[in-house]
Image: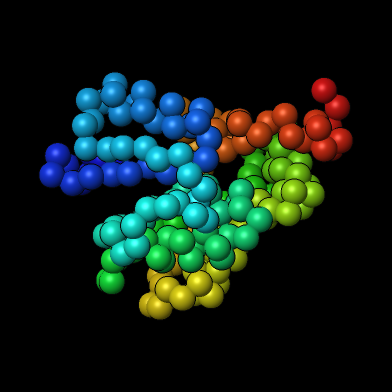
Amino acid sequence: IAEMVGPDGQAIGVDLSTDQLDLARKAAASAQLANCQFVEASAIETGLPEASFDVVYCRLLLIHLPDPLRGLAEMRRLLKPGGILVCEDTEVASTFTEPPSAIDRSGQLMTLLGNRNGTDWNLGRRLYQLVLASGFAGANLSAHQAAVTRGENKRIMDWQVGEPSHAPIQAGHVSG
């Protein structure tokens, strides 16, 4: 996003995870991006100034929130009048491989884990209604089912669940 807004714009990344923020800082430094900063904060209470952003973007965030409407309310609070929300999320139950592999089972396990933790890892199917319910009028929807056959993007499930990967074991859904 920092590349998209150019040197005269600014991008602010928010995450509760210091590990994720460290990765983002390293990526920004590697790309020589001086127009971005990173804030350690909750997505439901960022502490950032109200009505201060032209665009708010989140990706694979709402599935991690017990109350995604609170996250969307915070995003709405941050947007300037006429601002744009871009929100990408997923439905892990729809993840599959051909031929079948452990990834097929991981979607089922993450669904169970989400249910146990009070989150919805299949929120993607409800995203449009959640956006409307949080007060965004005139919302548009575009749904995509990725088909990745090669390259770095084949690691999407690893990226999506990599940090909480120990959780299914701790929850007793699988053994270590």
